[in-house]
Length: 165
Image (cartoon, rainbow, N blue to C red; front, side, top):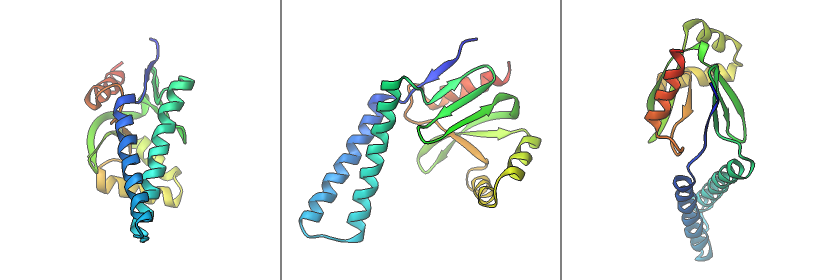
């Protein structure tokens, strides 16, 4: 079967970029007004960097035609622009939706032996993060599901349909 490519939705993410820009403008206006506090600087930098990163992701995907997810019969390949990651369907028991801080994520429930292997191969910091993720979200790893050309539930269903093949 051919590969399926999933991109970020331009319109959904441009709205986020516009919101970030609005916060940056408000922060700059407050700085010009003399409110030179740590919170104003921090929020202006946070939203400025976040907005630029979202814009980078959108432009990178559209100009270079590099999707965020490439789904084959064997795996999901994720390319966030910062990191490439692969999830092999043979290692996964199931995918399911979770909410993490008002963001939809697709949780990955690995097979027990794979889960143990990932935990053992992780650095001490990586093990700490994996344990924290299990405690908070109920899974060691998850994939972003918001802001794509496909709805989160459809994306999760697509991933699960590849498990049965």
